[in-house]
Picture: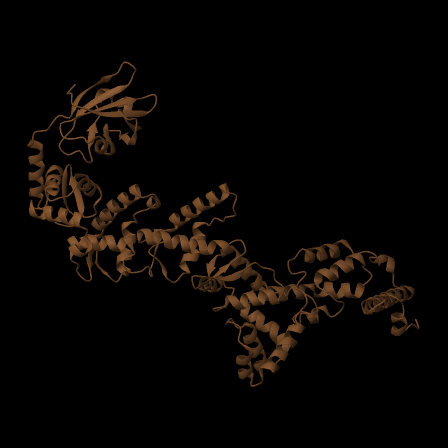
Length: 616
């Protein structure tokens, strides 16, 4: 008992840390000794200690109550270090979790146990009150409990830490508000931080905010701010920068961070960090191809990239449609035209395909219904997707989405369903030479309606290639197919009587029989012979009804019979119409009145084509 600190430090190998531990244990031993002695004295004075729980156990109700507290998420967040709870935990040290574990292992500290059991209802009440407070109010209450009643100092340090909801202020800004130097503010701040509990601080709204944002990431910062307010976590706009700083300061572990993507701040978690930039790049590329795009197209594209990455053993991430929506809604140059469709307002002039096609259509005839413009865009997209691999995902947006697009675009004027250009355009400035010929022919040779044969012959006479005209009749956004073998310029009104007259004229025209004969070869091949018409581009040939069941719904790779060269593919639809002969006819130099012979090998699923002069 007479040993001094100096005596202990003179022991070899014993340092300051050991000295403090010895002093602490000694103090605890004295405290326990005093409690036991007090109980013994009371027992000697006549108290029946055997009628109460002994010094080594609690009764069942007390044990259950303490066990309930241990299971609470706040058991390790409340201690005498937190000034909001210090008065309720005047005896003992440590968090509720530490105190209860100590009492269960050593119930001899009856005074501390009794105080804790007595104050548990008040502690629970204080906890429930905290759960109902906004995060700003809880932070300011904590700060006031630490700093005291100096309102100006509380306000200044709150601004410095961002606990009012704004971004954290600089030392200079806080010094100006408090009329002290930056160094003095730094000292005050350091003193406040030193007084914070050394364990995670009880702040339920902070936990709610972290959980909400981790479940919503990736999300633009201004959407994240609104999300906190919508869920009654904050009563106003609360800075995400301040929130993340506060989480770190008050002992919260989170993978949340703020990532800048194309100049836009986005809240991400560790699991979503890498995917944010990929979403923006993919969405922008798709919108650049078509003018507008959907979140589903972005998702499909990302899924394809993830699949390729998996095949080559690379790390990749996928994103849900909700992830994609959250990221894109936070990108200021991305504007949604509906729940799923969006466009990018900063795509350079002349690079938005939907804008270019619409101007092209309206330069020929304006105004037009949005439905007519959409059908023209569909024809153009169909051609591009069939001829260029990278555009196979092109999708025409719904009419309502296109209407929203035109309402927002400064170059268009939408009056109910009628679309017009703000500044009229000369079609010769926006349309290629080939389609200009088509327009001139349609305007010169009829009252607005032409059959295909007349159209092709007139265009060929003006120098166009027959195959080019065939492509235009199938895919040009400027032409409208209004009936069997009838075309007109899109958006140009034609008299129904004229349409009927042209249709009747076509029906009265003598038709040339193309099918010559068909049969089976000795080795089991089905052969069919046709006589070629004068126009062979876009040729569609009918399969005889008697053998149609063998070919319908199938496709056959084409082999030139004389050379064995592969030349495209013949497809037969359910109606018996076959098409895809163009590559072979060009290769073989086929001409009018030649006989085309097709030999279908049903076992090998290919077809051999040849040209013969015989009429069979």
